[in-house]
Image (cartoon, rainbow, N blue to C red):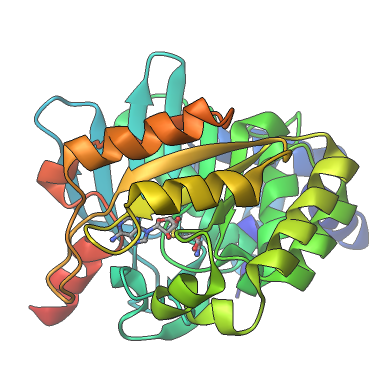
Length: 341
Ligand code: SAH
């Protein structure tokens, strides 16, 4: 049976018309769903016979909450969700003064193979559909009891490796009549699949593109990111430049600082040179240490030195606040501990 969450408003309207119903019923049903009502039987402005047709035609495929962890300071929630086929993914909700942000997963596992990342260790199992990604938001809003206003596609998976579903998802959450999450409140993070960045630029979305760079040169980047063997940094930055020209949006570069690997002053200078003149922002992330590899976090001293060099060179730079590290909030670690047990 089809998951109704995989339909967009136009598709559901068309379905209504095909089934001899009024198109506006589609909007009414979406209103219920987007306001957290997940049982057709509770949609009390819908005629009974339509409800029973809906029940026979669709399922409302939400994941089951397997674990809900809350950080000590209550500002981070981590969810382990199980889809109907038993596959597990993680979502994280972070509470900020300016609103709640959710980090959603786009695939079960990942096939990009980045060395520091726990989501990719067992490869990719499958893509998530647009409705399954949407369901993470609906379910998390229900669990937290508050509206989510910002979305980052930074959970497990490579969003641009699941392009069509991800684009459909973004259009869906942006819909005025639905969750109404502004394009500028959406960030898509990619390891850098160049042709897909070019395609994304053509969508003319106003979303923030975040690119996982992690090294200023190909030699170093290849050591931790297999995608670097396919596309050079030159090609990647070229695609970013095009994205900026098309959208006028500032691109974010993510750079996870690993002790004695990519955190020297010399590399900070090299990075400054590579990014010179680009409308961008660098987000430095103290690497999250995982059991499966030997990579260690840079010292606080090196992190701030690195930042200061970038800033001195005119590159806007922030250090990512570490939230929820007491609840394994980063990078697929919770799922892994469940898969093992
Ligand atoms: N596949 C996408 C999005 C998911 S990863 C991408 O590569 O961007 C989200 C971000 O977390 C990426 O910048 C990724 O490089 C980073 N990341 C993964 N594992 C990490 C770790 N152990 N410590 C710090 N950052 C990590």
